[in-house]
Image 1 (tube, rainbow, N blue to C red):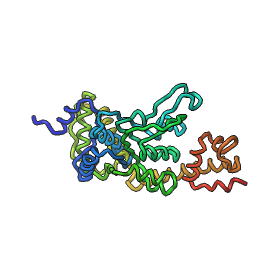
Image 2: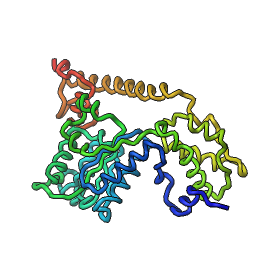
Image 3: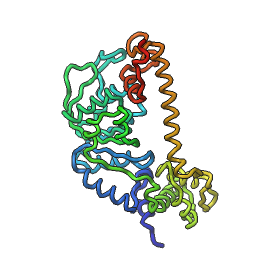
Image 4: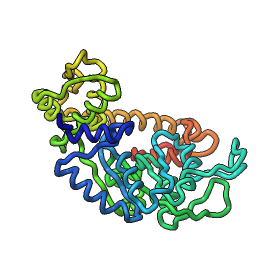
Length: 336
């Protein structure tokens, strides 16, 4: 019995998680692979853009593994996961006594990534104050711990990722244009899975064989009918969604029958899928704007200090300023 290339791949990688295999042979992914090979050796900032679930984190790791500093540290910062008030100390560290609770010196992620790669996931979540400090790092290779008197020098390659269109964020006043030009020396866009339907079968077969081995299952190969269903589906969750659906089916299927419940696939068409997040974003922005305007009215337009809107909302004044600009709130209306 001959061994398929996918079977050989599954056997060769052993315990490597399946999300590590994101490449197919579609025209879109061949272009990504070619660009990746070109940029990995060049020690310059890289901006990876793509929808959630397209594999931006995996690409960032591959850039590091093929770079001249591949033996150095790879440090990831998930910007949305760390509250804005803590993100600065996480990134740049602090000195003893810099603030209440700073009982000793702590190096930040930037310092930890010296002679390695710093991966900033969802870079658009940084507030404007942190963006300016990141700009200094990219321009001068220097940063300053919180509470320190002098800058520190560091050698680090910065790779950023986002699922947003940063040009729109610049227009909204929430992202610095000069920082955009610094991080966008090389741009790598990952296509959505619906843009590379030719890869769906290869990825699905890989995930099927991987989870067969992992769960000691014996689900049969995908039928042509099932492959057709998968290739027509629009995959709003991209590769991550495909992986989860195949894993779920291997766990739930009986015997050697492999099937996918079509109820697991979203019944929305592509236009509805793309419109829903935009509608939800507008609703959330309207609610956020209403809350901020209410706080500004109570504080008579005062932002910082005791009785200011920032204190009422429990957020730093710099964050509130950024939100006011983002939501285009006229704070002067509340000063009288």
